[in-house]
Image (cartoon, rainbow, N blue to C red; front, side, top):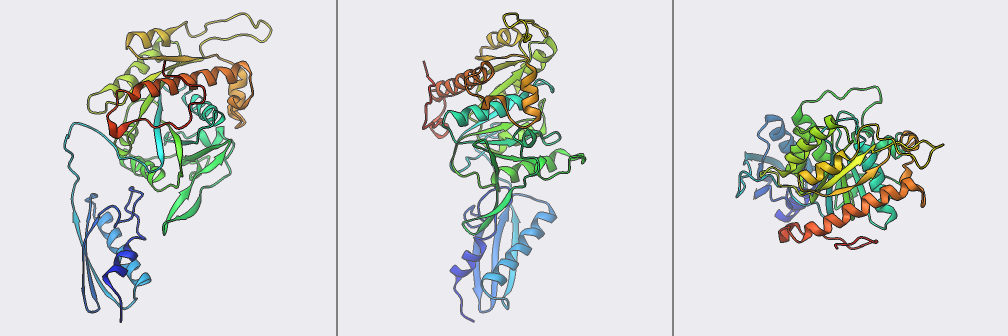
Length: 376
């Protein structure tokens, strides 16, 4: 039986470290490999202390060596748990995803304010401006992006990347998309505790072949909870956009959403606030504006908390209809609604560029296409 230690390492490169997007070798989980004749001993460290995780990695290592090296080898796996320690235990900071330049979180303190509608239309606007864009639907319990992009019947396919199987996002309108909506039945309720939801999201992020992206927009669920913390722990968010209506109740929750990102332990720059459903204009009275939920509330809030006001989107029936049929209104050319979303999107990118000057070098915002945006 002839084989080299390097053959063992090549076999282990086919195993993806859970939630990492890298192999056990690349992620430096493999600490040592010892060969004694037909016996192979592998020392591996993992950060998950559960018995299930230990057993899973042991089985995968044995299987990989038998399949790629020799079936007759006797393999012993020593699994050690090491919880990663950070230099600053109070700072929550994720790791970069290769080839994704900017990650923007779209959030709202309250449900029903149109956050997912804003996300889908901003994504389409960015794509029309020449950017490479992806959307991660992180609303675990109520995913909707697969509906808004008219890909409800699609399923992410498996693709081979450097010998490892990854998910290929579904693409439409020039935007790459992953959502838990692809993996659940329309009539199925997702009843998960926080850790299960967090694990699922990490798989969508790191076990996906996103390719090169200028922007990855993350559509967060309403409120401030486990999913939000999981996201900021998993990846370095370049900036957050908060969506609200002008209504006082919605603004109170939006203020909490902003406060979450501004916490010292999270410290994610808030790029600004978008006011959705700002006013209603009847088709028969195009010059009239009716402020059903109040006037200028989000703009006033932005001034109060010293963040930017990114713009307002009117309450228009066609925006809702377009979302329902999976054809965002931002796809229109030079209409008042598409121009409104384009204006909000350009202001968001401009604020991101301004934040660039204040971010440390490892988190510098990298944009290759300006597309009409300005830092002035």
